[in-house]
Image (cartoon, rainbow, N blue to C red; front, side, top):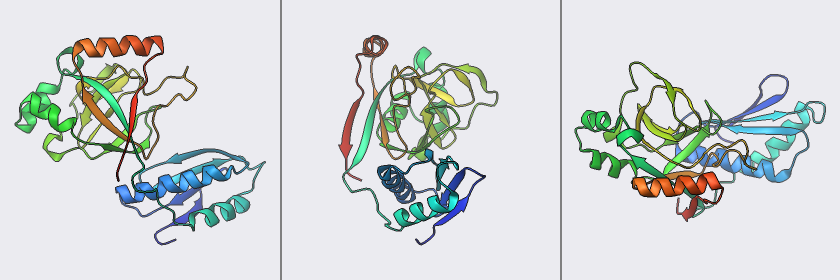
Length: 242
């Protein structure tokens, strides 16, 4: 268990600390550990929360003690299993870039010294690893944004950013899953609901998955939005190689 520690976190949580660097390989170890632990169906575990460098396990101490859980978890993570190559899960998220849907696209382009079309091509040309979810339910922390389009956050955050907005904040890009305040530069919008409390699985994606942004026209955006509202739209998911 090189570069790995298991420690208590309060009276009902256990924290698995992996190597303290942000990297796809560490993220794969975290995702693999979460998958293995979930497969064991350990009674008492109530939730698992992956982050950049750790996996937090919440549990009910009336069902399982810390010592018992520690032993179960330690035996699992000793396996040092990694996700199998070729099992990359990529969610294709349609995005309408610019205009009223992405009011800061011109600012991003100007900061980068590129045209808006070049920014869109760069932004939609990468499979982004979902390192973790947080801040808001379903808010994705993505890795892999090209340095060419890194853009500082707004000097004065907006009071309300609409759900579905796609933006850049510094070296990160992501999707706002619900209406909220925020300071990211908005470059587009997706009609896909990455968080829907009425859905059987409210959060669409998981840490360890990937997102690919797919540019669409306004007509395509409106057609997809109508299908999403009707409950008939299925986000395309494809497999790729790690």
